[in-house]
Length: 313
Image 1 (spheres, helix red, strand yellow):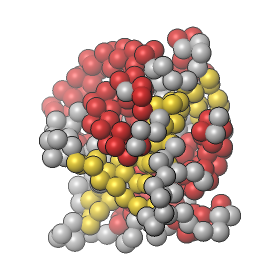
Image 2 (tube, rainbow, N blue to C red):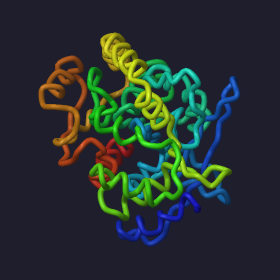
Image 3 (tube, one colour):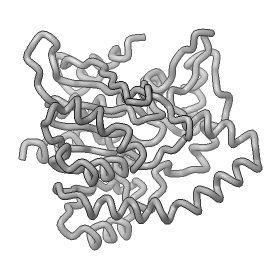
Image 4 (cartoon, rainbow, N blue to C red):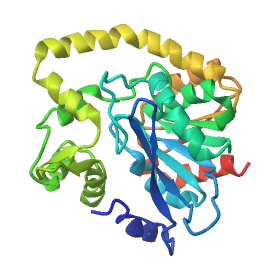
């Protein structure tokens, strides 16, 4: 299936007459791995227009989670598949933390933005990655928007539910089986939305079996079958959480660009978390929206409006 086949219906739902041009980009890293992304609003037949906005998704998602938000936004944008997700390569060390992911995507973002400082938008794990990228490469980021995450909050969210969801078989006969599983866990929203999400977050292998594109499902499945390994992984997770939290706050403190936190009222960032964020970063802005954690999917038009305000100054 064409990965862009859902855009016409999404555009129609927003009242947009035509689907903007969109294409997939690939950047090869020095070690042979690739970083992939979607480029919206760049007609191949016209002069190149650098993106103004770069978007980073959360754990277990991919660049297509931003489709509706970008359609509503209506300006040139880049949505990156983080390593281990979408069409980007998996990491053999399974090290998916903000600082490591930022180092992976930095050369690709620099190349694709063509020297144009970006409004960098990151949701959940993408927000922590965005903070690390903005701290290490200030020349790439004009403003940073962090969506429903602060350091210390688990970017995987309800770990027990997510682990149980992904701890099933590593491959399936049909995508419909994955849709039914998502709906049975209360994930994906409507059947139509779940079908779109599953289709864009899975792939058909050469043997005809279907598997998730992201590495997290395979890691969860492996841990589910090995209680000792799962216990060890959980202990390690707790041991490094403090260091990652400190690193996240250090990254945010080092960001020279203006920062905005978008908090979903039903998301992961609690009012005390938002107050702590504001206390640590008094110059930052905090905006609340009526949404859960995946603001880009639940309130794409509202989020697009907020991004547009920042992008257009």
